[in-house]
Amino acid sequence: MGRMADIEAEGEATAGEVPDLGQLAGLVGYALRRAQLAVFADFHRSFAPLELRPAQFSVLLMLRQTPGLRQSQVADALAIKRTNFVSLFDGLVARGLARRVPVDTDRRAVSLHLTPEGEDFAARMIAISAEHEGHLTARLGADGRAQLLALLQKLLVL
Amino acid sequence: MGRMADIEAEGEATAGEVPDLGQLAGLVGYALRRAQLAVFADFHRSFAPLELRPAQFSVLLMLRQTPGLRQSQVADALAIKRTNFVSLFDGLVARGLARRVPVDTDRRAVSLHLTPEGEDFAARMIAISAEHEGHLTARLGADGRAQLLALLQKLLVL
DNA sequence: TATTGTTATACTCTATAACTATA
DNA sequence: TATAGTTATAGAGTATAACAATA
Image (cartoon, rainbow over all chains, first blue to last red; front, side, top):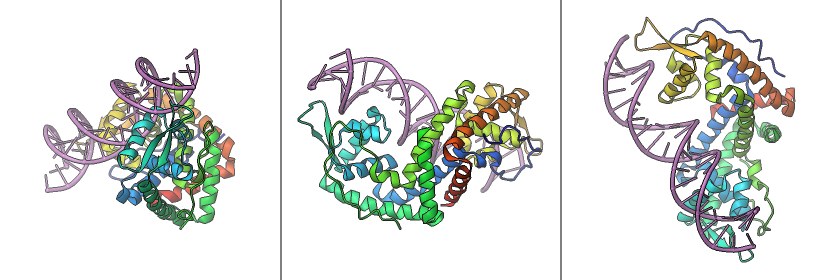
C-alpha cells in the first residue's frame, strides 16, 4: 500500500538553495518520468546525426524486422493513433526511407516496407542504437539492465 | 555494448494479425516509454476525481513538504522551464490551492505556499497517491518496487 | 550586468470528429 | 454496416526570445 499518507510537512524553505525532490523521488511514476527524460535526452544526442526521433526509430526498426505489415498494424503495435501515424510515416517516405505498397487482397489497405536506402539507414540506425544502449548499460550493469527490463514489463498490464 | 547490429530481418508479415514489438521490447528506452505511458494512464484514472495532472501533483507535493520555496527553485527542481511554470502555477492559484507571497529580501522574487484549502486538497491527493502507488506495488512486489526505484535513479546521470 | 518573473510564440505530441473508398 | 487510410483541428507539453522590475 505504501506509506505516503502519514508524511508530515517540514519547515520553511531557505532561499537561494536548490531543494531536492523530497517524497517525489520515492514515487515510481515520478522516477519513471525523470528516467525517461534522461534516457530520451541521450537518445536525441546519440541520434542527432541521423535526425531521427524515437517514434520514427520504432517504425523503422519494426519494418526492418517485419516488412509488409499494414499501416494500422504498425500503429496499433506501437500504440500510435492511426490518425497520427499518417504524417509520421509520410516523413519517412519523404526522406526516401520507406514506402507504402498496395495490398491486392484488400484495396483499402497498404503494406509498409523499407526502401533499399531505408535498409542502409536502418543498419546505421541500429549501430547507433547499440551505442546508445551501451550508455545505459554502463550505468545499470548488464544484470541491472535485465532486471530493469523485467520490472518494466510488469507495469504494462495495469 | 549490446548485440543489436547483427540481428537480421525476418520474413514477410502475415496480414490480419497484431504483430509483437520484436526487438523494440528489448530496448531500455522503449520499455521505459511504454511503462511510463501505462503508469501515467493509471495516474490519470486514479486522480480523475481531483482533476489533477502529474505536473500539478508534483508542485503541490513539493510545496506541502517545503513551503516558501521560490518559484524558480520549484521549477528547477522539477525540471520545468520557468516560463512554462507560470501558467501551471496560475492554474493552482485559480483553484485556490496555492498562492504567491512577496519576498521582502528580494522584491523580484516570490515564495510559493499552499492555501489552507490547498493543504486539505494535498491530504486527499496524498491518499490517492498511496492508492495509485499500491496498484504499482501490486504488480512489482515490494522488493521489485525498491529495485526499480534504485535502477531508475542510476539513469538520471547520463 | 545579471536575475526573477512574465508574455508571446512556435513546435511537437496526442486526441477526436468526420470524410473516402473500399469491404 | 464496418474497416483502412486520411484530413482537419484542438489540446497538452515543451522550447526560445524578449521584456519589466529589481538586484
